Length: 308
Image (tube, rainbow, N blue to C red; front, side):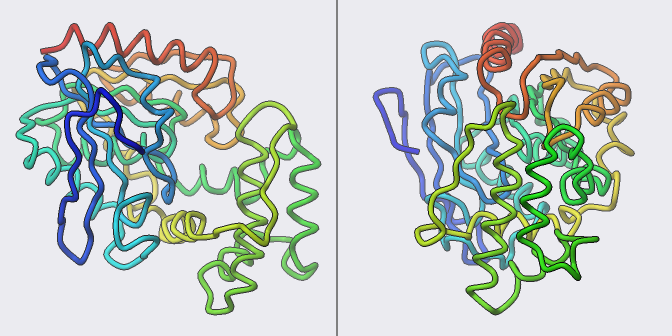
């Protein structure tokens, strides 16, 4: 993420364990309710287009690259990189910027991290705006890893199986994950490429996804993502759904009806558990764009101005 005319400041925040986070403070300094934006992944980063969901003339937004991501250092490391570590990092960012309370906004993995943080520190979270809902459960991971979406994208699943040795096609992701985290760099890159092509092909409801050539492909982000998936996102199975009733703050859930990466039933189950939630269905897939992005932006403008 690059600074622009609305950037209030940039930080290289030492959070311990050898990690330094890139943080960008952006928008309107005097906003009534600051917002912390949590990017997806794990293994992605805060991107310039994430700013399009916010209004810098009325909102103050804190963007940061999570451990091992983007401009944070060391890049792509798996050491001291767990959900608890990321939750602690949000605390350190809030303390450094003197944010007593704030709103959390996140999509996909960012929604999971927001929920995990809110469970650990509910008094600091005034509200949450989440999209592409993911809670880190085994059932959600099985949906993607076992091809439970294949009735909708049969050719994508077929391509993934074709990239898997025949003897491992009953559990292709188990094979690829082992290779991705293994010591053979060539096999790791090949498997990371196959898994990212699988995931990327399901992001939108069309067939326009194209992978870069494998020769220039960087598997670091997928390696970090698989590190989390292989460890159940470092939470007991169903932890967030089992404890969601403890989250009393307002929560807005924006979920695509045809999300093939994060199955919509998760958003519905979470909505049923949360005592003060609002579920907004959109007609998109996983990406928060077009209809979903418009809904998200409008909600953010209304909610952030109305909460103090």
